[in-house]
Amino acid sequence: MTDSGAEAISPTAHATSYVWGRNGLSYPELVTRQGRVMFEVMWPMMTVAGLLGGPTLESYLLARHRTIDALLERAIEEEGVTQVVEIACGLSPRGLRFKQRHGEKLTYIEADLPGMAARKEAALARMGALSESHRVVVLDALKEQGPNSLTELAGTLEPDRGLVVITEGLLGYLEIGLVQGIWGRVAETLAGFRAGRYMADIQLSGEADPWVRVFRGVLSMFVRGAVHMHFEDQPAAVSALERAGFKEAEIRRAMDLAETNDVRDTPGARMAHVVHAG
Image 1 (cartoon, rainbow, N blue to C red):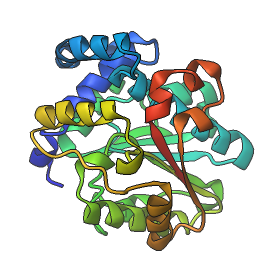
Image 2 (cartoon, rainbow, N blue to C red):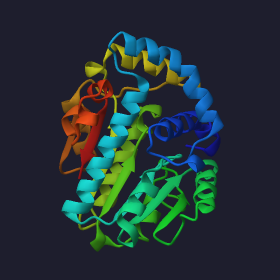
Image 3 (cartoon, one colour):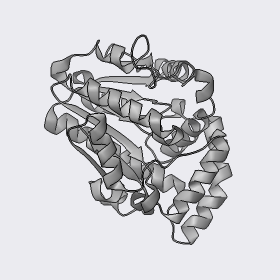
């Protein structure tokens, strides 16, 4: 994916940053005016969905984000994983929140294409948040090897400390072949670590709430391209993950994975599916 191509996707990074900010999950330095404008454009549709008892895009984004947070916390606390690479990190506050929680024992690397990486690095620098154990790097998830690839970055990490790789909000914008390529590279990378986990969100066409299709249409308009649902159901997606090289994989709704009622009982938790593979 070229950096110019990513410019079509980056508007959603701004919108999600505003959602996290207005719900107390982010920081003013990571919330943009562009994100607020996008959110206000979508607000009337979300209001209608809420009045009709359906999930809103906001509740979906919060459910998937908080569920991945819970899975990451479990990997750190129960499996002793102390290295994280978040690919296509955008303006996500996760790295900063987890570094504040776990301190120097955790290495958190935020990775994105040059334009967004520079923006994220500048924001974190203004906050005084950057360090050797919390840094931003340029990474192209579609590169198989060489500079700015996951393979190259993984070579700088410590195998004995384990590794979690996260891709939140990325897969839906890529064609199936590109998704399978990313999964293969992530699985191969994790195989070189004492403990390895992959976490992501995914949309399944056979289990999609009618509102999901509405939201896909809105997102497609903003990113000026298709938003994909690659698999019919959970078994099909799990099978693809296993073919990519993961020894174990599960895909479940956020409502089934969430550890707290404030996530589990939201309409968005019914709509959000999360990948957890290792």
